[in-house]
Amino acid sequence: MLKINRRKFCAIATGAAASIAAGLRTSAAAAADHPFQLRYALASCLYGDMKLDEILPQLSRAGAECLDLWPSPHGNQREAIDELGVDKFRELLSRYDVRLGLTTRYDLGPFGLDEELRHVAKLGGNLVVTGSNRAKGLSAAETKSVVREFVRKMSPHVAVAEKCGVTIAIENHVRTLIDSPDSLKYLAEFSPSTRLGIAMAPYHLPQDAKLLADLIESLGPNLVHFYAWQYGCGCTKKMPKEKELEQLPGRGKLSFRPLLEALRRIEYRGFTEIFMHTTPRGLPIRDSAAEVTDEINRARKYLEDCLR
Image 1 (tube, rainbow, N blue to C red):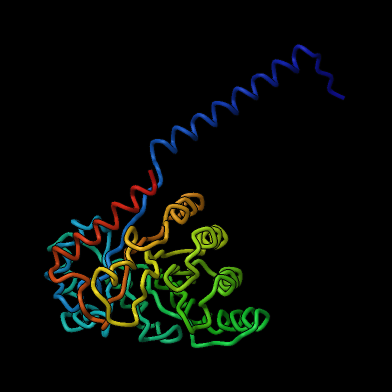
Image 2: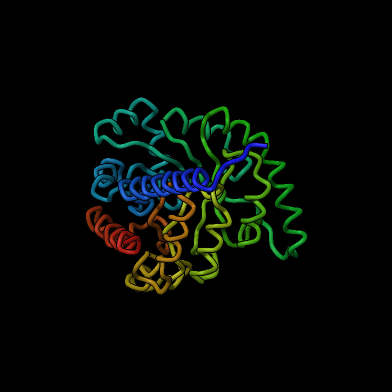
């Protein structure tokens, strides 16, 4: 047996403690040098049916890294790139020095994404958002079982996503299978691949900041897209513009501070999308492209202030 006298033991312990302290100081310094920041994607539908030539110059003004293309009835920009063709769309992106990050394709559904995944990959994107199939009135036990089956049915489409290097993100949407905190947790639990993740929309969940923050932490790395979007006064009926805008961060009652702190704790690296819907769909949230961007920047300032 190796024997160490007291003096030598104390020296070793002191050295170990010093090494640990130095490591902690280094980690703290690294964290200070690289503070947590949100990475923004810009939803084309916020601009209604405006042309891509009007929208693309707004990305840099809105602090966005990339574009999220939406199809009709929310916008018509996804259809526009089919009309332009891949080469001309790439030229358009190059002209404005922007890139495509994702498309949102509720119209295709979760089992109809294969061609879209391939197309997004060709255009340099890495994410497609969609919803789950319709479901309602399930018990907790039934929900877990049906989510497991949903994930199994997604397997061939996840295989395509893996081959393309594109992630499928399932948004929690009212009256669908994935619409509750528990169903989101089950999806995270059963997902077999990093290419099947979650796009979390607080709008469709209880407007309880602690519940939402806890949910973010429980989803962890399965959370791949985050909508900075609250319920406000809803988006299913016509109302005065100032009421409609309460879906945006900083305008409605929901505090995003606990949610952003939770994103910080899980070291979230996906995109954040400042978001709302107009009623009827397809209208810009403000009258001009510049005014839309100003509204986005108002919400973005609020989010950034929450992180300070």
